[in-house]
Length: 346
Image (cartoon, rainbow, N blue to C red; front, side, top):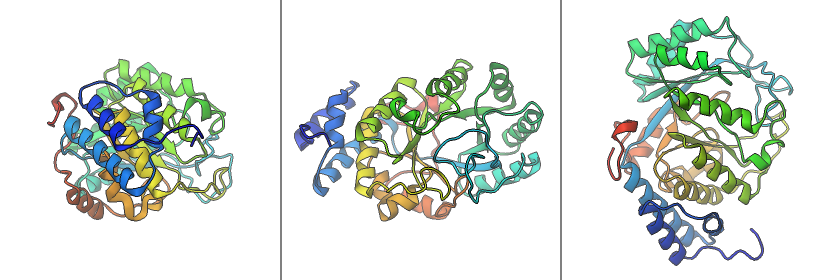
């Protein structure tokens, strides 16, 4: 915390909540004070205020996404957190693009477990020309044979590839900015922050929902965490994902000290203040970092989860996730529909 920064008190929390509920964005200096909130009682008060904002703008929906690591490892990018990068020696699996039938079978399993969305994820900087027909077949089949919304996360795309995926049935595209612009070069050097934003803009121009987020706990400062949040707000995606670094042995970030669980709860709450009316989805690393405070994190304004495990690590199981959502008053049977969400309803 900056030495001269006065942590938020309940008066400021109430004032910021009223401002956001009235449709007015909070200032970065107020967000800094909110993130500097001290003491368990005041952190819980902040979380409750963020949850009220979530209720007002998003109702009780709980957006659930399951994913498949459809092509793993041997990635030419050097993302410092990623065990799939060919730059590092890790125990991550390496295999080529899975057959469409196997991807569709995984989607059926995810739907049976309660997921609303199914994300096809491939390692690498961009899909190869020989891979696109199989990806398109998988997207078409999932769209035709299940009730799932299809998301893809394939790296950088051309305009033509976006159009092809949309025509096949893709509803949403995930492409994370990873971290704050000011911290980006310490995390990735093989592409730029603007490269990431450019792909998101390309997807948005084609009328596809965009999902964008990143990872907290990668050695960034608290101010950089807020910079990251305000940049996500500026990008204006429909869904923003918060991963929490779960250090992978063999990567440059393999020995990073984790953030305390209550610091993570504060961060989630302040992100909800900054981005009040979009899906805030907790993703990789939540089980390992939040531990017994996962439900409290949902009560700090989150309203989405990746369920059924992640790219190279497992999760706690969809059944337990669904129970947790019900326990905190969210309804996993009500999926997010962009056009239907208004203040207080979904």
